[in-house]
Length: 395
Ligand SMILES: Nc1ncnc2c1ncn2[C@@H]1O[C@H](COP(=O)(O)OP(=O)(O)OP(=O)(O)O)[C@@H](O)[C@H]1O
Ligand SMILES: C[C@@](O)(CCO)CC(=O)[O-]
Ligand SMILES: [Mg+2]
Image (cartoon, rainbow, N blue to C red; front, side, top):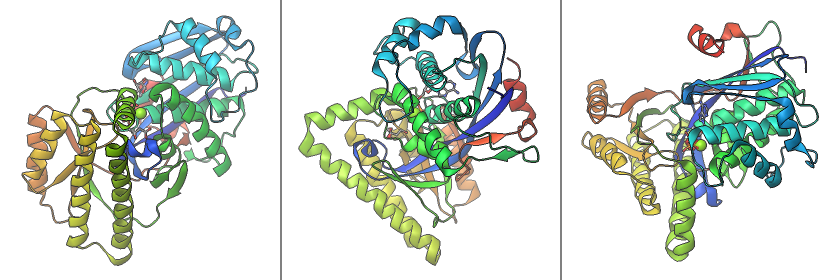
């Protein structure tokens, strides 16, 4: 391993339409956010693997000699579709993390150790990894995917399984298509550990960035999309994607003839939204286009409530925004977390400000966001803000 120091970042995401249905093979539309997770990897000579996760107050290290026996009997790891269940079991025993744990720290540690051991299976390297995110953790903005994509890109590059694309003249660089596919596949393993049964949409956005249509593992970048203005609200109600995804599965199993048409309808909402966005980009947006987008938001929010992933805080968001003619839905797994509100081009600044003020008075965080940020990148230290460098370099 030649890397002495390595910086990467990956964006969070918002799902416009298709959360939960996408887990069951339906269409979703998602776009990257301008909020990113940053990672610094250093090679060391301590004989330890160290992880610093200041967002979740977790700072741990393990001796490589203690981790080595966990790999006994493991075959060649290539980041393919299935998790190595035996390795995961040994890791759970080693860390004392139970099967049903959804604890924030436990999930982050398990995903890290699993990826580290499988990527470096041939020769465990002495490294320190520090991760810090601008994204709220566990709020529906793809924090787990951004974390897993950063880990995957940094570990695979440090191992030499993919290149380090940054040249001395560059501040930021991206990997080749084939390398990004490998990053995405390995990040999906981390998502499986944190989510249980992820669709893969979140790690796809974290890897590729931009606006994507995701359907049964097929990723299609949408090049024809208008500029959309979106208000993001974090209700700050904690929830776990794993628990919510499994609750929806239970409901589908219990009432298949009731729930399957709902999933189908959400898929149709995604497709109608995609068609409308394309028309807006090609012919220019009209008020009628916005009426359609707003109706689709309302329909989908009702469907998500039927799936059981709503929350009274999200009802409050919908009510407060609708009082000013604005339409909202949850984004991500729901159950609290974040919601999106579509702003029309003609929406008055004073209306936006009073909406933000009222939502803040409810105890929520609320801000206008910018979407379509680039996917995973390697950076020179010069590309990073002093604030981010200070945090990542303080360990
Ligand atoms: N900055 C971070 N540092 C360490 N762990 C993180 C970080 N961000 C996310 N995680 C891990 O991801 C988990 C949150 O994942 P979860 O899927 O529940 O929420 P999310 O990804 O924010 O939302 P969604 O999946 O709905 O978009 C945390 O419990 C933690 O284990
Ligand atoms: C709820 C879900 O659809 C989106 C979470 O951001 C889960 C997934 O797709 O893996
Ligand atoms: Mg997640």
